[in-house]
Image (cartoon, rainbow, N blue to C red; front, side):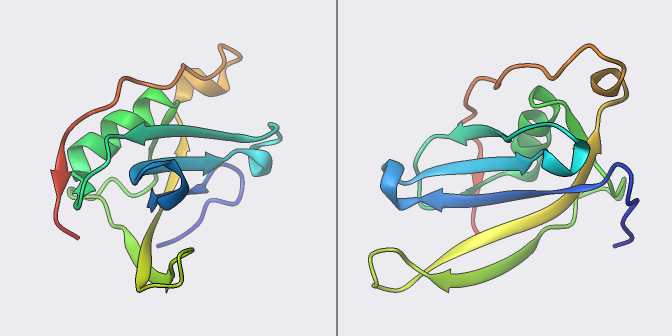
Length: 120
């Protein structure tokens, strides 16, 4: 993956133990000179949301995949779980703001949760 230092930022996806196991997709917008993090929660489940559901959620947050390759590349990392039992997975991919989001219209709100999951 190549990074466009002016617009590409990382998006992350992982199950949130402290929030009942919902899958949270979030983008840290501080590198875009915006304060904070935008996020979307998917329903809790044993599988990660599908790539299509993640792309829809990213669009609702004002982002598109930085890599236009079909299937969207996600890098997965295992980290110790907060409970100390087992591991949790964190997915990461590069995204960039939608053109209309960078034209002063602001980011759209968090989209409705999708119940589209796939196995990790």
